[in-house]
Image (cartoon, rainbow, N blue to C red; front, top):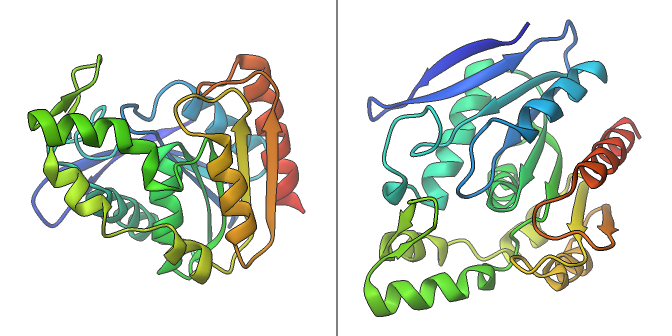
Length: 234
């Protein structure tokens, strides 16, 4: 049975995490997408991870879901801090990280400086910062971009994002990488995953899904989970 864990941060805020336990030393941690949270597909992925012999963790970044904070205040740096706080809290020797979209970018950048991370997988991963060009243009023109969900970003997000070019990841990351990307993704271009695959100086699996967009169908999600855990087993 899964258990909830409020994880305290240095600024007095808490992030909400859920642990799906297994009596093993293997750990699988999920990082949700930009305007998402730990529910839905992340719960299914964690349940599958337990079936495969992993302790699994899903959590909400600050400003999302059940965690403290305002979304407009979050940055890539704060998300990396949140992920590191989760890894520190559960205190395992080794982790496999999985992230969707911006959650994948968070996982990749965190993994560069954390030798506990032994593998990183991303679904529709944000690698090149150009994925946010349209949003950046609105912020530069109007001072803020507001999503249909009500989440907003301002210049602080982009000032921080510019400090994290992805070539630092492709040059420094030395653990196995898996990328899963829909060929019809109109939010994060498949070309970005192709470019990242070519740039990585480590073993990379790239699996593409015909007809799938940024959000996978249930059938594609099942195929991805099967491919993900087959890859982790290897």
